[in-house]
Length: 299
Image (cartoon, rainbow, N blue to C red; front, side, top):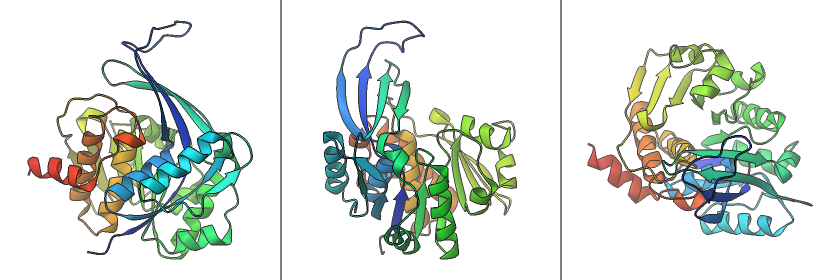
């Protein structure tokens, strides 16, 4: 089987990760336990996740001219992601401050840095989009850039997957170009004003949608009448930071391979479950064999 060509347009951040027994409340200082600097960002994470899950993957985005930027590009390359089109912008790279508690829950503050400068796609970047099987994008870069990439993909017959995170309302022009929307409950509410009580509301704006439900799995629906809850794989959670990115990257690969969508969502749930068993973002993203092993164990 030919590896699907996945192009990810999105962010790259350096994640500064601290672990603590509990998440701090406003104004509270909590004594932490461990600290690590881990390359991350939704775009870079999803590109690495797709590459490890079996895609031929390219990353489009912007990194800073600082030492973080050097590390971010090196992590992409080491993970098998084509980063030749990644821009280098003078100044700071994006940074995410992550705190993970003893239950694996987290809080994240992301500062965009170079990601904010990823605007107005070049012809080379547009050519990469047009040559993909699946375009994957998120919302940690300017929404105008996401829209431009999605419209270019749609015009070229390339399938468009949007992970609409962080939560925000979206322009109709972008939604009209989306083939598959991936959101959590809060992001779904930001788009439609409805959540778990009416997941099908998303199908009024896109033809296919997934709502990720954490340790409850995911919901998938489409305009052909499918509406399915896909249960989660039961594993011990260490850190949920990049679970959504593992899910999205794996889903793009399964979709690009032509799998039936409910099976694709179930395989993506396995990827997310493997990811939460390890601490960190990009370092926790699973290899294809690990996804297959967990997926097969529940067959």
